[in-house]
Image (cartoon, rainbow, N blue to C red):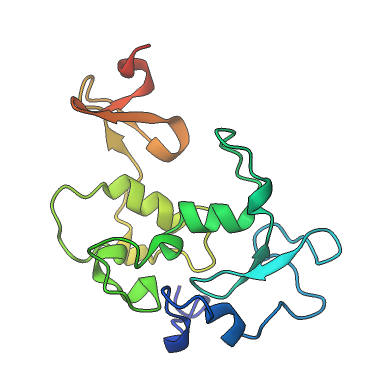
Length: 174
């Protein structure tokens, strides 16, 4: 996996530096395409992500609240990947690459962490560098409903987390 997605030393591309994209090459080069949806500059505006300086569509301002649309590449990468929210959480090491962070990669041993959510954020299609196999245990995408004890995949099937714990949609009720 590391051969396909090597860890690159992006010291100047730290998440907290708003000029990271400009130091990564300024505007995307001519002929660049979004790495997630493959649209080119003639179809949409392109930008560099602030977290990893990859080229993505710059159309997040067109997102309609509560639509839950995943057609906005920069927004989806920022909200639904470990790369996008690395460094925003208290437990992160603030380094430039989330795969070096023990908390984001799942090697910190913190109790109460939502393992299924962490693995989904590391493996979903909005990633450029997916979670390593060693950091994604088998069946880790499954969560257990606290009411019926059934297995489900929260990122795909939906779930509700409340004072009574994590519940699948049938058990969550109206």
